[in-house]
Amino acid sequence: MGGYKATIINELEKMYKKKKMIVILIISIAVILIGKLISFGMSTVGVGVFKESTIFPISVLSVLSITPLPLFTTLVAIDLFAGEFSHNTMKITLTRPVSRFKIFSAKVTVIAIFVLINLLSVMFLSTVAGLICNFSSISFIGIIRIVISYIVTLLPIMVFALVVVFFSNIFKSGTAVFFLSVMLYLISFIMGKILSPYSSLFITSMLDWYIHWVSGVTLIPKITREFLIMLGYGIMFFTAGYYLFDKRDL
Amino acid sequence: MEKVIEIKELTKIYKNGRGIQNLSLDIYKGDIFGFLGPNGSGKTTAMKIMTGLMKADSGTVKLFGYNIVDEYEKAMERVGCIIETAESYPYLTAYENLKLFSRYYKNIDDNRINEVLELTGLLRYQNEKAKNFSLGMKQRLGLSAAILSKPDLVILDEPLNGLDVEGMIEIRKLIKRLAETEKTTFFISSHLIHDVELTCTRIGILYEGKLLNVDYMQNILSNYATLENYFISEVDKNGRI
Image 1 (cartoon, one colour):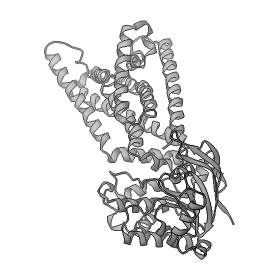
Image 2 (tube, rainbow over the protein chains, first blue to last red; image 1 turned 120 degrees about the vertical axis):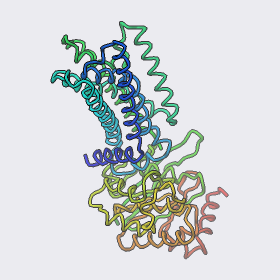
Image 3 (cartoon, rainbow over the protein chains, first blue to last red; image 1 turned 135 degrees about the horizontal axis):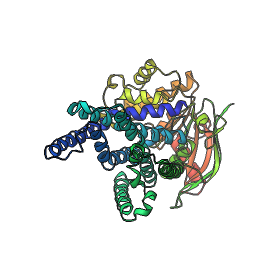
Image 4 (cartoon, helix red, strand yellow; image 1 turned 90 degrees about the horizontal axis):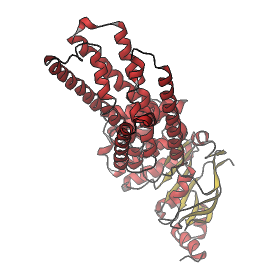
């Protein structure tokens, strides 16, 4: 466990020192501010969806989960794998007394930590922004719905991250992985819309699965089905990604 | 004598036909082993397999009795290395780089980090980012990382690359001192024959992926005027020049 823990700490420190985390958080905050400005504008013209303080964080999540967050996660995943291979810095970690499985797992854990920090920061700031504008509409149930929505979004984002990690271990160039990931994301997104009866097979159509968790009606069968599909994808891409990572010669 | 490295019939052939073939070699505790060979002879390939960066087609490597494939963590626990190039994270300072590496080992504190920085002549640059370092300074930082954990075995691929004459002398002294005082075993590859002659106690000659001969420096210099003469003779004997 020592090597796994050391790799997590090191990867987080490297991410912090590269200032990428800060830049990404700033962009995320900018998304909230722009969203809030738009909501003000819409409220003044009579569109009332943003009037409740607890709806604003959910509307921010609906934007965050399908565009900025998958994009940021892709960049971080590429940086941790393809980036290190192409800059020849992967061998620094690989020549330490720690197995490749622990290194791979630690890097995936760091991606999860990054996604979680991003989600929680945006959740906190958007909730505060929503409350400042309309404090009277706050409710305990509303806050719980926000927390659940943000937390469960971690799963589909992580499955997508594992797809990017898989490609990062096939190609040497980070740029190639980035464009391939973006293309696959777009194709999957469009296919999910066109082939709507089969949309649950496309990971992009599960990015908004938090809606099932917070809708008034309990959708346990649907949540279970989507959870199992995502788990299956996650296990498959984790295993395939690790296989390539372990076999890779430097 | 305790075997530190045990290589048996190691083979790795690339698509272009180059690589190493049936390499068998034992390195004992306290050896300063010089792995000599021209560019493309397979030195780096052998060292990459020894440190787990590359998988062999066949054959085995054991470090301290542990197989590098099956028991990687145990095999690498007492090993420090520089393979191909001395890499560091350019956006971190020399101190921060070593701090990162120290987390993989027990009992390495700031005093030890300062000690290795002083040994390699980098103490006054400890707060400078590695991206501003010259090639020689990067090499020194790589050496600091390799000896940080007080390893029993140090594997160095072209350790004197980029160093000025003063640096070469310092590093040579450091290697000899560690071998004498701490009984550290060194496995060094180099194409700088003169430096190998001045540093190493045992020599192996690799040519076109094959190990031609292994002998002690003392024996070599009692039969030949210089190591270079021995190298040419060995290669010639095998009908390759």
